[in-house]
Image (cartoon, rainbow, N blue to C red; front, top):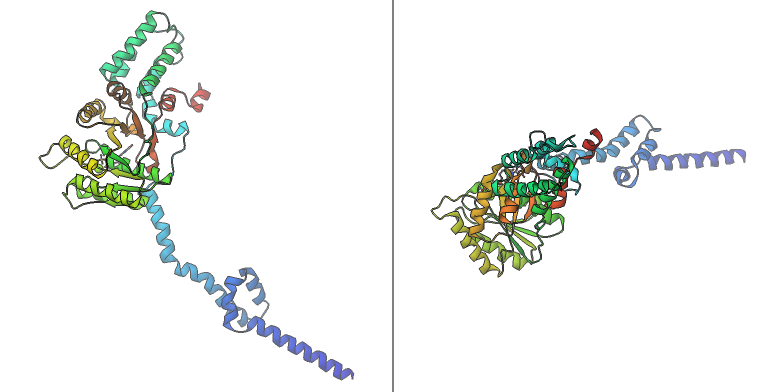
Length: 410
Ligand SMILES: Nc1nc2c(ncn2[C@@H]2O[C@H](COP(=O)(O)OP(=O)(O)OP(=O)(O)O)[C@@H](O)[C@H]2O)c(=O)[nH]1
Ligand SMILES: [Mg+2]
């Protein structure tokens, strides 16, 4: 009887052992399922106590799927990892810029620096309570040499001398505050982002060559996209193949369609097509690029007028915005360009680019004061998020005001 019980117990042990070893060592199928169904450490723990060969047999299939994704992934992983990083190098992130003044201050570092427009003005007043009798002359010299332009400089000086004569500006601080208020008044004629209230909103970008039209289109397109709007780019600079390619790079990066024609095609026809496509597809914004210099005999201004007429045929009331792109590093030349374009076509705003590249930011005062065209955006670098909606108060604050570090150091 005892033997029978022992035999039964042994039999049960053997049956259990066989059953267990089948479960842990048996078949490839369950193992193949492990990586998806079981947490990996558990699978390993289950096989380690087994024989020297079994764990290997187990470990391999268990680890193969673990290695498989990286092995299979190098293609897609490395490409997808490379593409964004390549994009990062050439193609900037698409996020909207934060609205803090430090970004704007950084972009205006050259104008704010020691040799810059504001830096030089500030050093006239720094640490002085008493008013220098030659203050007005010194201010005049700085404004003129900072591209503010003669008419605007003289208007500013007239108000300054007036205040000094009436003893309203009795201290250096009062003069500084008066200049700051004057700058706000000059720049505060409107501006800021385009409303984009039509469907599609047609934005026509004009300006001489190299000022930053195509780059600004890319930056604007990424702004609109980040706001959830759909965008079509019209490659209206048909005179250079490179111009179309440049726009296509932006289109790919941002994820929007680029309507183009053959090299040398009529720019008006390309923009017409783009507007039609946008209308049919319910697109929110059309951004139309143009050439800054023509290789044809047609003068640029005549060509632009012709394009506007064609745009009006595609959509009545368009273009809704005609933005003149000006390069801040062109100084007073930018003012002459603005006058030339203003005489040819109605402008709704200015985009002042490359403010990051000049110590003479005064041109923004001259343009706004003389032409009364509001600044819509300022370009502070080459990246997609280096385009800032213009706001006179924050611009003057960033230019004239001391940063937290400067205040702390004073
Ligand atoms: N630093 C700086 N560079 C800028 C800015 N905006 C544009 N650029 C650069 O200026 C150069 C000319 O820009 P584009 O956009 O090609 O100028 P464009 O007006 O389209 O020129 P054309 O097509 O020749 O008429 C490029 O190298 C841009 O990266 C800016 O705000 N700051
Ligand atoms: Mg261009």
